[in-house]
Image 1 (cartoon, rainbow, N blue to C red):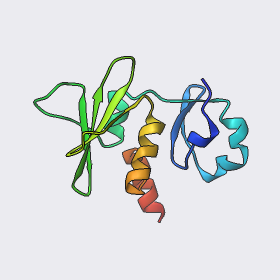
Image 2 (cartoon, rainbow, N blue to C red; image 1 turned 180 degrees about the vertical axis):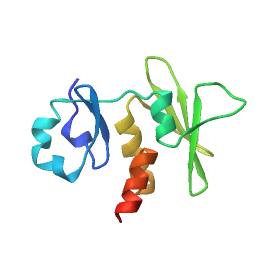
Image 3 (cartoon, helix red, strand yellow; image 1 turned 90 degrees about the horizontal axis):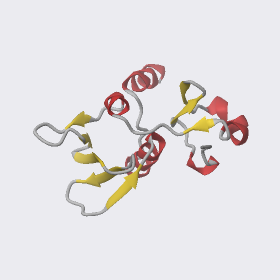
Image 4 (tube, helix red, strand yellow; image 1 turned 60 degrees about the vertical axis):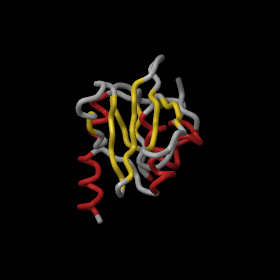
Length: 127
């Protein structure tokens, strides 16, 4: 399943062959070709942990949370490899399946990239 060009944003993670890559500025000149080779990454607990999400204690083992400036973001596993994305105090939910969708929504909401901890450190050290 190829990834649509408009879904790709700087910092997004995708599978390329057997590797996970992070989209960088160096990929931009070849994105139209590259997007045909990229595969979306399904949301999994190990990937959520790397992105700074934590299990909700005392709850269902499929509930995850991460806060941003005091606003908690919740993810809960749903049927068919989908996840429910919800915010504290809001009834609105969205179904997502892939890491890049979570990253894009995070960026749209907070204007901050959602990166793996090790990539966050590299970005801070590089600035």
